[in-house]
Image 1 (cartoon, rainbow, N blue to C red):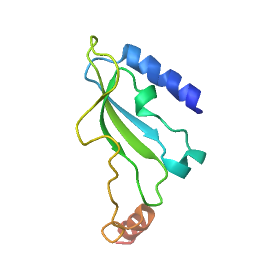
Image 2: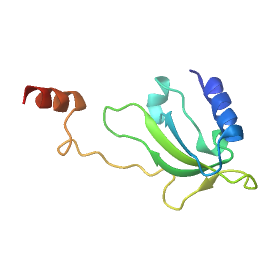
Image 3: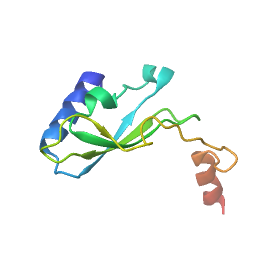
Length: 108
């Protein structure tokens, strides 16, 4: 799915989603945009309130955007304070590779 197709789907959802419904999107950040299309919250999420943006800093490619459908009379993009563009750290010492974790559980 390219950026135009994704924007078309988001616009359709903005039109037909129930107010206060939650939308979770995959996006990308930085050089990872070569692998996956970027969703720009400022332009692509009109009619949604951005609740959180997570850009991983490990081997995970996709960023995640969580947004809530605004009430009908609200326009534009709304951000909750301190939730936009924050980068949450990932400590590889606390979490192993998911595949490794699954294989360890299977052996037990």
